[in-house]
Amino acid sequence: MFAFIRGRLVCRDAASAVIDVNGIGFRLGMSTLALAALGAEGSETTIHTSLIVRDDSLQLYGFIDPCEQELFERLLGVSGIGPKVALSALSAFSAASLELLIVEEDVKRLSGIPGIGKKTAQRIILELRGTLSGQQGSPVGGTSAGQGAGPAAQVTEALLGMGFTSREIGLAMQGYDGGATDAAELLRFALKRLGG
Image (cartoon, rainbow, N blue to C red; front, side):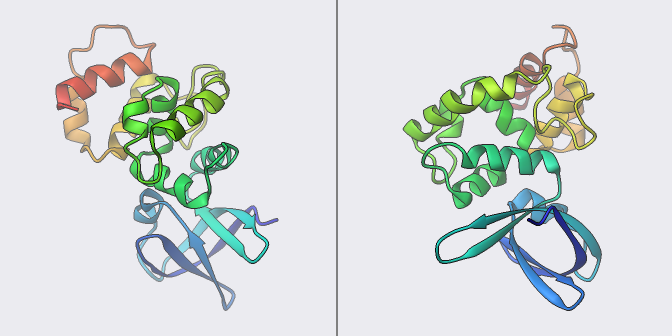
């Protein structure tokens, strides 16, 4: 129903933002990573949206990156995953790094996300890994520019989403000699050097 909204950022809290669109304030549930990417209060912004219709409510969710929105909607298709848990997952990891965890079947790290236990993590992997890994080797959340990003760009975005600085990431990826075609191997290499 709503593909996106464009307006002025009025305020934000830990889980949502209010956008003024021609005098109407829309409250959007958002991940902490998306909230952090918003500009200053009072600035103009464009946010991709998903409307969730329940028996007793209409809830609007917002995304800076359409890749994050796509993964959010895929997560909602997994049995037992609702909007709050999907946002919790996207708050813990960027779309790129979350997809890599799913493709790599990392149950331990997925089950560490608030609201996701071991069984739910296994269900996410079972239901999503095939659809995510089948996109020409490029994660859904690889970059906002599309599917042409190389492994180094994918891993950089994933590590930025985990809270590492660009300098730390650059140093961690130096000396990798496993070839430049495998994002998962490069991510493991960098995480090992970062102590992850």
